[in-house]
Length: 249
Image (cartoon, rainbow, N blue to C red):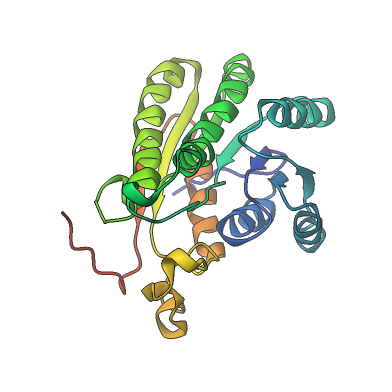
């Protein structure tokens, strides 16, 4: 029986928020699978350090900036002439507080970082992949898109919007051979919960953290999705650590 996986050798990939956490794990897994990877992030020093460690390209960029997206796509296309994989991983909790305690700015920043940024990237990658008649777009969502917890309204709204955006985008790109996946993780061994707003979060406990999804583990999931035969699309992929119990609203 033949191997169902396809080699990612020479595939060109962009991973946003790639300087640390899930993004770094995704970049590492794609690079190990043979892809030529570009990572972005806002912290130049952290970004360059990670790029050197992984042996990938780096370009400082803020996903909420259209100009940064233009500069990134121009650089990648000038260098390689194509784009095969875009992983919209960049995201930020911003402020995990009740809506009544938020500011207009924190609400807007939550939507910009967790939804609009991915939309800006997809808008630029879509025509490139349509011309190629191939490509994979992966948008990283969250279980917050499916369940409700106090304090998470803005973040959850952004991630739920990303899910529906991805589904609609798939219907637009399917006939052009371009695949769109919503990848939904939950508790991870990243810095996401390391904010004052999330003091006491279970994922900050070292014993629980060790049982959460590790960055490279999510990276392997991304690589697996990208390695699926080109005529098959994974629309939604949810992966949870068994240590996490979800009590839905």
